[in-house]
Length: 68
Figure: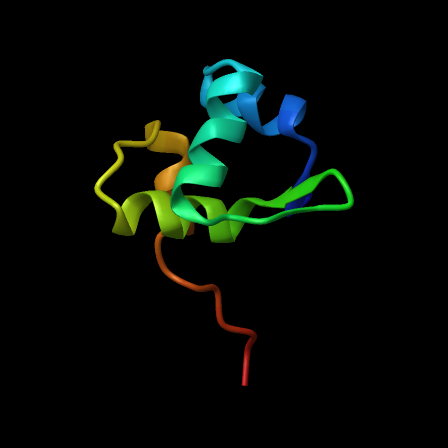
């Protein structure tokens, strides 16, 4: 599963327009680095800001820990 997605890929997953996604990133301070957005950072930032996300993305609310 890819974690760094283009705005087109992430907007398709979210079911919102690319323009809206970029606006949310700018509004909430989520960086777009080399044309990619860190999906986990985006989901955590939007959740913390009180934005509602599709159910399939809620799995990223908690950081995934590597087995010890």
